[in-house]
Length: 73
Image 1 (cartoon, one colour):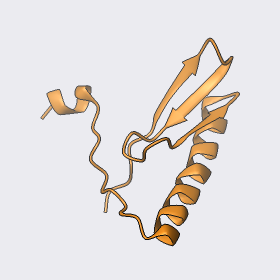
Image 2 (cartoon, one colour):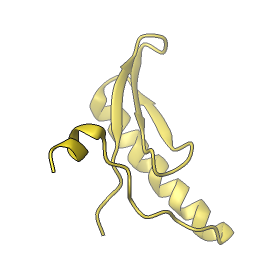
Image 3 (cartoon, rainbow, N blue to C red):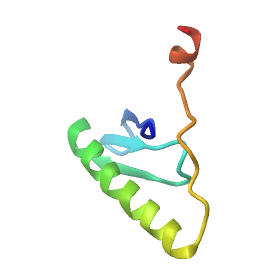
């Protein structure tokens, strides 16, 4: 199984980096550096998946691919 795509971008408004996983609704995290945001979203992903399993909710397969990758096929 391939892993979920993670977007990381700088937010002027928040004064740091936001990392999100598009395939997992509302799964995002903040960090002062890109590396910190990535580490935080990895923890958020684990918590998201654990909560979904505990609640018996479906876990979506990784599907999101940024347009830049879709255009290069």
